[in-house]
Length: 316
Image 1 (cartoon, rainbow, N blue to C red):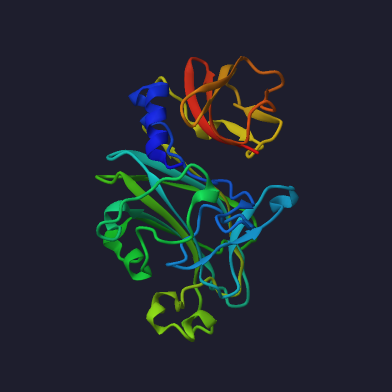
Image 2: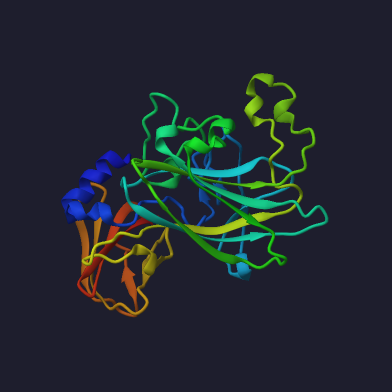
């Protein structure tokens, strides 16, 4: 189900101010879930094989089962990529938790780029999907790494170097979209010494020269634990989804809603056609019973302190 239908639903659900809320980022926690090919990967929803290899899964971050991440390593051209609908002339904040490991070569770094939708291939129209498993592995607006690296196509470029330890670090940066209504977030490991690529992908496919890289992360492991994209221009009547944690997601029997210091007054669940399938005043121990819902994608509306936010949830 593509989000032209979802956008119509959101409009009917909340009013035009809903677009001022946080944009939809699929699999922002990098959960190890099915990708379009059917196998599980923390990269689900984040592939662009025209630009580079899929990032790999890294499980149990901080020794916490289910807290997964993606990693770029082993001299491979690993990257992550996703196209996201945004508002023009709006400030957004990208928050992420990362780790850059050290080693004898000391070369590995993490690079994050926010790319302009106006830099997409001529004639390309982005499609925004409802679930990570629906996102294809290629065929996106950027298919040439040299176009990605063209500074004119970048809103922001951030490089995180090895900080001297292997701890996870929380970081953020703010950018303005200007005239853009679509962006792409791309991250990759960089710092590989400028040596010939021994990847078999390059041996027999000279026409696919953009995949013959020298920019991979070297022999070190660079990881991202999660990303969050939040609108920094929310109106008084709204609150940011970044302040609300909904888990587990995907869920089966129940969902926990952690809203920090906000008291949840009511919740409502809508299907992708906009039909209200569940409503409840308050929560019992911050938990919502969803065992009666069929498998699928839903929108969870959370009302707290007179304000509203919406989270996309998956029931399986």
